[in-house]
Image (cartoon, rainbow, N blue to C red):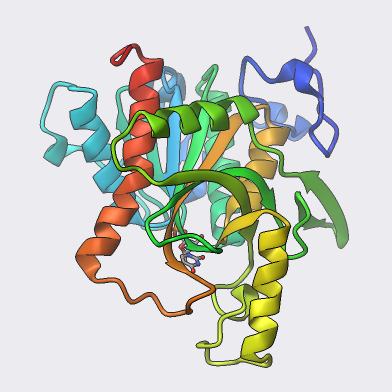
Amino acid sequence: MAPILLNCMGNDHEYIKQQVQVKNPYLDTMEEDILYHFSLSTKTHNLPEMFGDIKFVCVGGSANRMKAFAQFIHQELKLPGNPEEIRDICEGTDRYCMYKVGPVLSISHGMGVPSISIMLHELIKLLHHAQCRDVVLFRLGTSGGVGLAPGTVVITDKAVDYSFRPQFEQVVLGKVITRSTELDEGVANELLQCSSELQNFPSVIGNTMCTHDFYEGQGRLDGALCSFSHEEKLEYLRKAYEAGVRNIEMESTVFAAMCRVCGLKAAVICVTLLNRFEGDQITSPHDVLVEYQQRPQVLVSHFIKKRLGHIV
Ligand SMILES: O=P(O)(O)O[C@H]1O[C@H](CO)[C@@H](O)[C@H]1O
Ligand SMILES: O=c1cc[nH]c(=O)[nH]1
């Protein structure tokens, strides 16, 4: 049966269950597909054998965090072997790191939309070439909180842009294409349920604003450039809060949009490192920040263990 193509807003729900869809007719005509930034290729690697059993893909900005997550999930799933010895599948490149732990893939994506978007093109092609089915993607990140105490885990309802619109704009051949950033409601609710089963686990569902910059783009007063007042900053954050925004980060809209167009269920889970109404600098001690960053990992590990029947 011919694949059902989604339109560019990706709102054809019929399709979502099964295989990972690439939306590029040219791929089928290529003799070899080199996933350059992963240092993998359809000719030199048996992708179905290496990755065909993947069910959960977890991505996050930092290479060290995603290695730590791979080691953590290895222990949580009680898999054989030494978690200290897991190998970076992308060791042939230093762009991204990638670890496979049973049915879980853990990958770093760097900072910002361009970096994660390159990674996602190659990841989605990888899952497609490997004939993966029923895969769920999670972004495990850090963020600035909007009216929330530091350490709160935000499960994203809608990923929104700088004007609080649930959309991502991509420039293609000099024209702007707009894609929906709607995430999977069922997965978000399942994550919220998981969070209620964990002890002392502050979490909320809310909108996540994605910006193209950490400083001016997020209304910080402490960058090298600043052209607005303290009052103007607070006014923008107040408007964001009224629009349902509870945290700010830098990848969620393109992550949501690309997953949606390709029929992948996806969720964004980011811990807040500070409350942006109270400041801009991240002042918590290193050990506190490390513990905060583990919170999305703990939540997603609980979700995965439940899905795999390790917890009833
Ligand atoms: O913690 P990660 O996943 O890197 O995400 C957040 O942290 C970075 C900024 O410090 C941005 O990439 C932002 O989205
Ligand atoms: O304030 C913050 C903290 C982490 N990541 C962001 O993008 N912003």
